[in-house]
Image 1 (tube, helix red, strand yellow):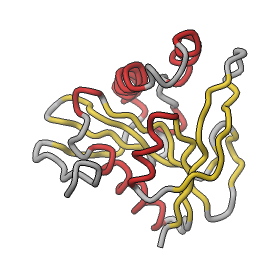
Image 2 (cartoon, rainbow, N blue to C red):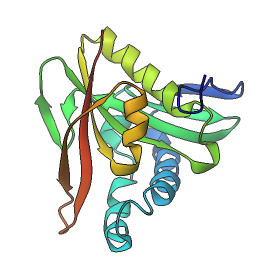
Image 3 (tube, rainbow, N blue to C red):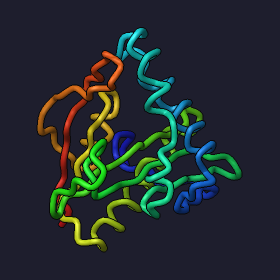
Image 4 (cartoon, rainbow, N blue to C red):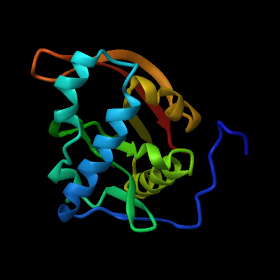
Length: 177
């Protein structure tokens, strides 16, 4: 496989569904991931306002059985999941569409196949739940990752963060066949 394609997972990686008690682990992964990988894609002033909001584990996702943690040895190295609810709109469901949620990989564990491992777990679970299409509201730096997974760009948009900051994002989707 090429450097841009899916990487085989390292032997010491394991994945499991997150539980509500994993909030601190998820927050740590998201903080490390977004704090490092979003730099250069967003203004520092925007990151200062946005990172404290988007790196906090969401209890509803942790309790959903649709959010996963990947461990490298005993260290939480990645997290991510999916929901039927449209992000930011609990209870609002678009029939047949699932939404990729809060993917992050600790920068110390990039290029080990963790993101792909998370996506496969989400995709397989979504297919079992009757989902035929997945959407990702991607941060700018993650667009190439989602494209490698088969997602296509639908449109650029900005996520209103509620504090005067609009986070430039890309709405993407893939059909599950």
